Image 1: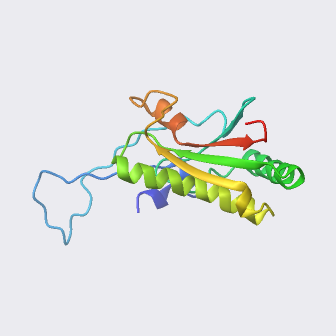
Image 2 (image 1 turned 180 degrees about the vertical axis):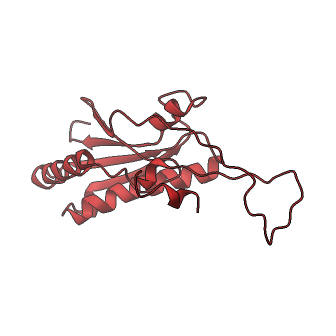
Length: 165
């Protein structure tokens, strides 16, 4: 309910809500909320990073939905056209930060990779040209002690697989 107060002005994927059990006894029929704590999260500078050997697509915390950003949509459109034209294969590897259990993070990361796969399939790419993998929290590219590092670790890595690879 607290999140709903802000979604008119802030994109839902930029809002993270967490809860904790209060150590104080209360009447649950009338007392639902003890306190609310707000922290502004730093907005990602880039939702897509293109390197010579890979591309990184960023994801919001605990989500399998990509960030709503025309840059991502444009990249995926171009990628789909290239894969269709060249018949190359693509590898999609999902990653998470270190929040949550290892088992849940492996599943979440795989779901992220499969979400990108499904978008490429919708754009006409043959399913047989796409491989999906999960590394969960096992291969961070930034430290997980601060939110800025965790944001960088929530990603899908896209690699084109050419005949020379």
